Image (cartoon, rainbow, N blue to C red; front, side):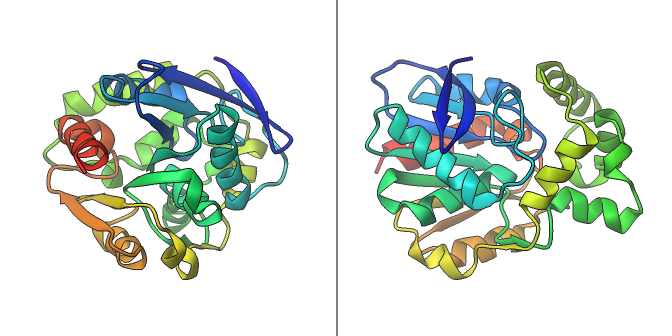
Length: 265
């Protein structure tokens, strides 16, 4: 993976697609890595130059002890600038959608368009941490496998077969290069504590597509609709056969919709 130094941090990223294609930054979700989005990135690389960074606190990028979503937003806009692009579209998934929206709030001129997948606009903490707390589950000591088992009932649509779920999760776990320590997970959770994008969403000028999964038990469609209503002119779609794993459950539709939204304007 190449790396850049942005805002005092080392940011590792992956690139897919032709150098001259329209740029698309792909922001992963909580505890994830750019490598975990490789199947989606490769699909999108047919029409875009996909740039997928490891977020702060994740993967091979810097793991500062303290940071927030504003720092994450500055990393995304700094990445676009450092790669010599005047602007780029950003597609963010789950936590990545919060960071993408934050980037568009901080530097509207750097963001040509937004696609926010399974988003929410605010929270006392991450959706995973909030759900774990309701279940009395200790994320700090849990393995990735234990956390995945906990989330089984809120990640998926009933339309997604058990075999397909296992296929998706196996691929995601295989792509993970860094196992986060309890302290690193705690720092990530603190970075989202009390975040609230609702007031500044109105400052976003980029054309925006918001996508939610009907069966999402972490960031349900109501949360996506709240985001869409806060962004001037945003379009809102609900995928009827998806949960929180929408990008893996209905990849074909997502790729088609992203291409149409970003290219056929």
